[in-house]
Image (cartoon, rainbow, N blue to C red; front, top):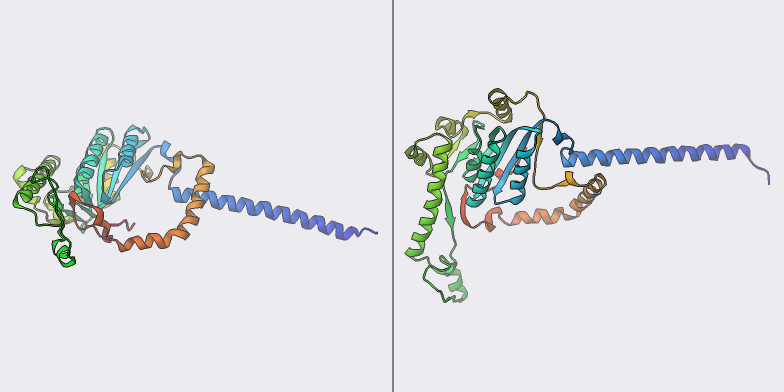
Length: 328
C-alpha cells in the first residue's frame, strides 16, 4: 500500500498543534486556578511575613470566639505587623464576648500601635471593642454609643393557655431557673436580673470612663443607652476624630511612627487556609466553588430565621439587623 507522504506530514503537524494547544490550555487553567485561589484567600503567607499594617475586621454579632482570640495573639507576636486597625461594623453582642475581645485587644495594644475605625455601626459591645484601642475614628454619620446592658426573656403563658398546656416544676429554691417562659416572672426574679444587669453595666461604664478619660458621672450620663452619630460622639469625646481607614492609618503614621505606605493586610480567624499546603489550597477552593453552587439555596433559606433569635442571656447589643453586615 503506497504511503501518502503529504498526508503523513499533515498528521504530524496536526498532532504537534494539538499537543501545543493542550499544553497551553493546561497552563491557562492552572494560572486561573492559582490566581483565583490567591484572590479568594486574600493574601499569601509570604505577604504576612513582610512589614505591614494588620486589619482586624469586627463584624456582625460579637460572641466569644477562641479562634479570633488566638489570631490576635498571633498578631501580637508577629514582627512583621507594625500597626493594627480594628475595622468595626457591629451592633454588639454578648457581654462575655465583648469582654474577652476587649482584654485581648488591650494586651495587643501593649505590643502594637492599635487604632479603631467605626464604619456603619459600632454600638454596645461594638463600641466596647473600639475603646480598647488608643485612638477611635468614625464617619460623621456612623452609628455608635448604645452603652448599656440588656437581659431579655420571653413569656408564652397565654399561648400555652390557648393550647390547653399546663407547665409545672419542682425547684430546689424559688429563684432556680427564673425567669421561665411559661409564667410571669416574680418580683424577686426581676430584682435578681436587675442586679445582674447593673453589675455588668457599672463595669461597662467604668471602662468608658477610664478609656475615654471622662469623669464617672459624665460617663454614666452618656451611658443611658442612646445611640449617636459619629459627629455627636466626637462632641461627647466618645471618639477622637471623624474619618475612615485613611484617617486611622494617618494617625498610626503621625503619632505612632509607623512607616508610611505600608500595605494593609486583613487578618481573619474564619479560615486558616494559609497554613495548608499549596496543592490543598487549590483543591479546597475548587471544592468551595462547586459547593457554593449547590448550597446557595440553603444559605439563602437561613435568612428566614432572624439573626438574633438564638442570642439570649446578658447582652450588650443594639438592633442587630442586615444593616450591620459588611457592605464593603
